[in-house]
Image (cartoon, rainbow, N blue to C red; front, top):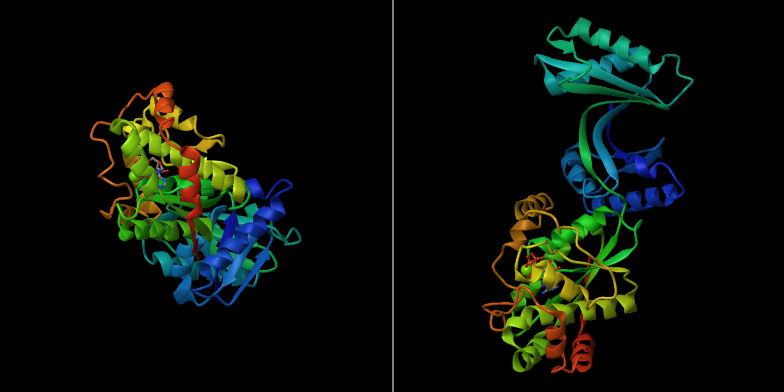
Amino acid sequence: MEWLLAISFGEIFLKGKNRNLFYKRAVENIKRNIKEIGYDDMYVESSKLYIKADRKKFTSLKKEIRKVFGITYISEVIKIDKDIEVIGQSVLELIDYYYKDQNLTFKVESKRTDKSYPLTSPKINSKIGELVLNNRSNLKVDIHNPNFYIYIDIKAYAYVYINRKEGLGGLPIGSSGKGLLLLSGGIDSPVAGFMMAKRGMMVEAIHFHSYPFTSKRAHQKAMDLAKLLSAYTGKMRVFSINLAGIYKAISKNCPRKETTILSRRFMMRIANKISEDYGFKALITGEALGQVASQTLESISVINESSSLPILRPLIGMDKQDIIDISIEIDTYDKAIEPYDDCCSIFAPDKPVTKPRLEYIKESEKNLDIKALEEAAIKEMEIIEIA
Ligand code: ATP
Ligand code: MG
């Protein structure tokens, strides 16, 4: 018997006018993620994608395929002749393979896509169920809460499987416009990028560093995070901007306690400018309400005022622990907690304002040549391609 991986896609894009586009995107993303591991062949049969590959590669293939949004399930299936005797025999072999001699309950779930097949789905279920009961006395049927399912898909061939793993769901990348992620070196922003990508947004990143006040390693850490994130988003660019000059100007001309807010507003304005030039329709940040001084409602609204593009904050109502859990799951946590910092301690205020008032902030900004500072920073921008 031949083993394959079978990929099922979400309801949502099996319907509607974007169906073909979504489908194409998801398949492209899968191909890109597994190119390095390698596979023998790939084909679509009535809405599922089948991948032929050396069985030894299944675990690593599944890990990479699972990072593609829009997938509901990944299964290890066997492809056999659709003769009911053959199906029955293979089901018994599969059961022995996974659960030999264990006392468990099961349920058969078959789906007949080939409507010319002589047995209806309920008939297949009862025939196979009976066969299993007669031949494996350690197993019982439980149709409400079984320990495992036996899935049978009747198409041009029969596909039989027990091992089915959930995908991440979501929408395929590229189906919801383009957003620019403000990527720091922390835990939150990669998670925020992941969440918008999961909704189908094409995500690229902008990172602000302050070299030589921040280290090269801090910069590299942000690039490493972008690389980890790109397993989900696909290849992305990181627009890298040096804010050192801007920090120096702020520290020379403005109250120290306003540094964080003032620099955040610079980040927003610069991100807006880059978005205009590169076609991003929204900014994305990792802000969560109340987490730090710059994330009070007052701060958020003063920061907001500096952006004409919408700022998407997918983490806004989340607890830190929930954000950490996601970052562990998506593999960015270990990198994010490395000590190299993206913001420079020499400029950071000991007592930042927590309830900034827009009119005071604007008053302070009058002491800065904002336009010249921004143009200088953008002129020195580096664009890093993350493969
Ligand atoms: P993170 O864990 O993402 O670093 P944080 O908890 O440190 O966030 P803040 O420092 O207030 O919180 O940053 C809030 C958001 O502002 C970040 O999630 C990120 O989107 C953006 N941001 C902050 N610093 C930078 C930076 N150096 N470059 C790009 N974006 C940044
Ligand atoms: Mg941070």
